[in-house]
Image 1 (cartoon, rainbow, N blue to C red):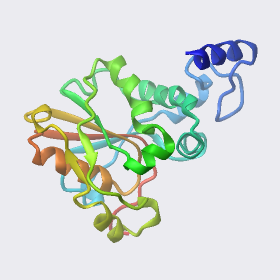
Image 2: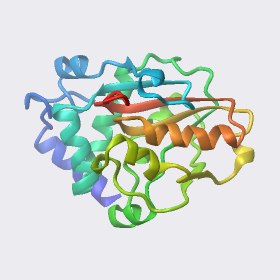
Image 3: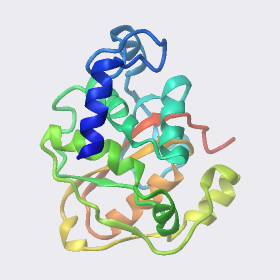
Length: 222
């Protein structure tokens, strides 16, 4: 509470600058020109990435430049203050009503050790306020059943072995028969999201659509 108050005072004295161009930022934390350029949703085709369980996937921005820097600051420097700026990309990129068929939003869970080290799941910090603004049910229905290595360190085949069977649904009755929106901060190969979608569908989810804040994906055949 005190931290929020101090940040509000500081922002009045020292107005925020756009993280992309360093000009004065608007209420969303970006200048109008940059957020219009950066927040552009694109489809990520599951078939191209050899993903069997995701019904579709969308990314709100590209994992480059200021977006990449802000996500890295959150993950490795614990800069949770960037969550609002990143969440605003979702507001701009996604048309309201885009997910009118969705009944619950489920975040990809963080490794327990990484959660203890970081103190938060960056995906939840970014997406939960957005889900509330859209009127969606927020459901932390997945857990990691075992430790996994960071996916970015591995080849595509190693990623599949590393993450296979690593997720479970904590309360299947909450996802059974529902259309789920599965959210994550970054889409690269899509293997992690697909494995989460597998767990959700095997627990009874009817459809699982993916939504990533940013994508810098490499097709799975490479």
